[in-house]
Image 1 (spheres, rainbow, N blue to C red):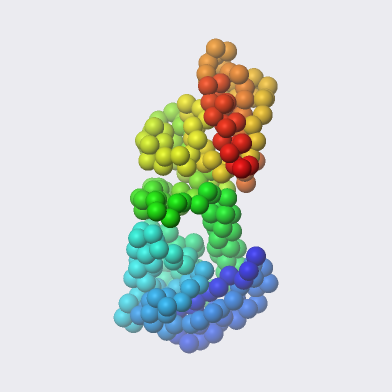
Image 2: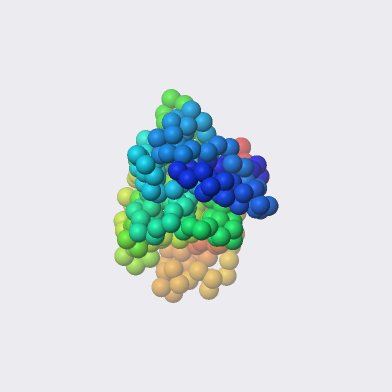
Length: 277
C-alpha cells in the first residue's frame, strides 16, 4: 500500500512540528506529511487545489475553526465529491460529539501520544484499503448513467451520532426482527428500514438471496450446499421453509456464510457466472 498522505492543520507552529515528528516516527502504517496549514482558511484553500488522504485537524483556531473545515469536507462528500478523512487533534474534549457527527476517524487530545496517533492512522489506512477494494471489485457505472447521489451513502444513527456509510463498502443487509443489520468488512450497524425498500433503492447492485438478506453482487464468492442444521435457524427450524434446502453463499472479506433460499439459487448461480465474464 502507498503511504497515507497527510495534511497537518494547527495554528501553533510547535504543535505542527511535533505532529510531523510523530508521523515520521511511525513505521506502520506508512505515512507522509504532504503539507501544513496554520488556519482553517489556509487548509480549505489548499484542499481545493490538492489531494490528500487524511487531515490531522486542530479544532480551535483563529477564523474558521476545525469543525467548519470538517463540515466543508462533509458537504463535499454529500455532493458526491472526493474528500479526505479527518482526525481531530485538540487540547479540549468538549467538541468530541460534534466531531463524530462529522464522521471523524478519531479524536485525539493534546499532548498526543504516539501510540494513539498510530492507532488512528491505522484505522484511516484500513478504511482507505476497504474503499479501494470495494470500488475495484464493483462493476463500473455506465458513463451515461451515473448513480444518483442519494444511492451512494447510507445514513446510520449510532449512539447519538450520525454516520454515513458508503454503499460501495456494504457487503450485505440482513433483516433480523424489526431491524436490518448492515455489514461492512470491519463493522456491523443496526438500522431501521425494510429490505424491500433497500432493494428498490439500490437496484441491481445487490442480489436478493433470501427473504431476509440482500448481498452486494461483487461480495459473493461462492455458492455451496451445506448441512440443513447450519442455516435452519433462519427459517425457525421449519423443514418446509423457503431456506431449508441449505444452500449458502460465502461473503468476501468477512468469510461468512449466508443462507440462500431454494427459489434464489438459480439467480445466485447466474450472478456468479456473470462475474466471470
